Image 1 (cartoon, rainbow, N blue to C red):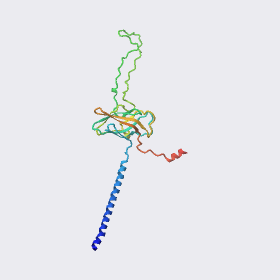
Image 2: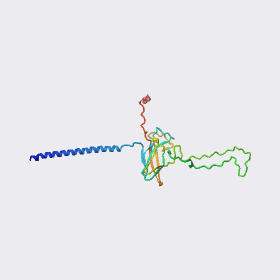
Image 3: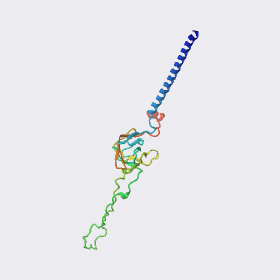
Image 4: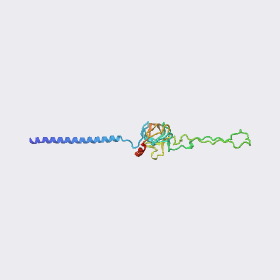
Length: 252
C-alpha cells in the first residue's frame, strides 16, 4: 500500500518534467523560425548595387538590366548624352540590337563600325567646258579669251548614317544566352548616346522619354522594348557635402 502511494507522485513529477521540456523545445523552434523569416524578408527588400532600371522585351526573351543615363551635373540642349545599358539574351538564338529611338533626340552608336565613305553614291563627273562653248563641227575663234570660267569640282554628299557623335546605323550582336554591355562608365568605348539633346536641358533626376529599342533575330522576326522613361543614374561616388564655413560666408 505504501509503495503504491509513493509511486503515484513520482510518476506525476516525471510527466510534468517531460511536458516542461517539450514546451521549451517548441519555444526554441518558434524563435528560430521567426529569426529565419526576418532574414528572408530583409534579403527580399535589398536593392541592386548598381542603380538603374530593369525591363523586358515584348516577347520576354531579352532583358535590360541597370539601364540609365550616365550621370552629369547638366546636359545642355544640343549636347551628346551617353547611355548605359546591359542587354541579356535569354533566347536560344542570336539576336541583334538594330534600332533605338527617343523623344529627346536621335540615338546613335558610338564606337561601333563607322560607315565607309565608299558607300556614298558617287556623283557623275560633269565634262569640263568653257562658258562659251561652240556647236559641234564649228571651230572656236582664235581670239577667244583663254580665262573662261570652269565648273567647281563636285563634292560627294556625306553618308546619311554618319553623325557628329556616332553612327545612326545600329547593329550590335547579342549571342544566345549572352550579354551586350554598352556602357560609357568605367572607360567604355562602345555605347549608345543621344546625338544632340533636344528640348530643355537634362538635370539630375531627369529622364529621357519614350525610349524604344528594336531587336532583330536571325530569321528576320523582330521584338521591341519600350521604356516610358530612362532616368539619369546617381553619381558613382557620393557628391562632397558643402563646407560649413562656405555656407556661413554665403549667409553673411
